[in-house]
Image: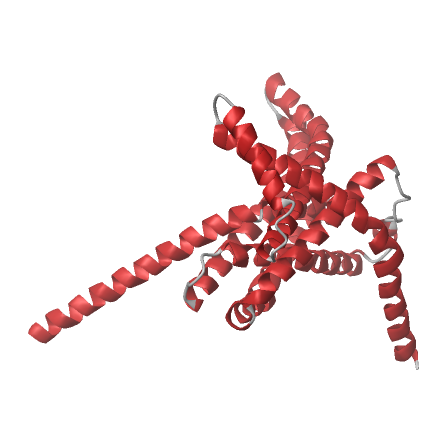
Length: 325
């Protein structure tokens, strides 16, 4: 009997430890997920274009395929790489994070640049002319590749946001849970976005009351504006988060400007504010982080256009030539 009681006591102790671990994983995942806001908003803003031109009945299946590809990117490829990085090369996290922040600054600044200097859009009429199933596979593959870049940035941000000294199981659990939460939020939101106009159209046709029919028409008219607003918010978030990542990375690597200058200005602004000092300090910091991110991204734009992109095309052309031989 005493042996049984001791066993039950041990089981209870193990359960308490497991519950604490689960609670720790959930807390770490929630906090880390919030840090990835910029990349998440951009992901939600970018993905709907991949279902443009397909029949309404195929929109949700396409979003579902992209979501599954995103889960595979995060859990099968990026999660093990993140754990290896955390265990054997933690010093690489900050440089990789800064590389991802630079990518966010470049992407956001390029979108701002094209607002003032529009470029000729790529032809996208092949959906109507080609084999729908083959084109669907191409679109999904392209979306999953784009998601891989954003997911890598998201997982790196999550990894950097985790508290140091955690066990590998807590890190793995927090990374996996945060990755799944973000994927569900992003692609659940995308599913709602791409079907909102269809719902509005249906409501305008079958609504029994004039109010519901008017609501349906309002949804249809509002969705293009909403997509523009989402793109603007996503671009601003990319620039802000990217700038913040690069500034904090420079600070951690020993280059304390512009971090200290921005911090000093934000503290002065908070002290001058009569109320909501914490919000004022955060807002001033975010503003200057965004200004830095925009300027930095605009500097990167010609570097990428005239240096990196031609190099990539040359390498691809060389590989294609080798394959032809």
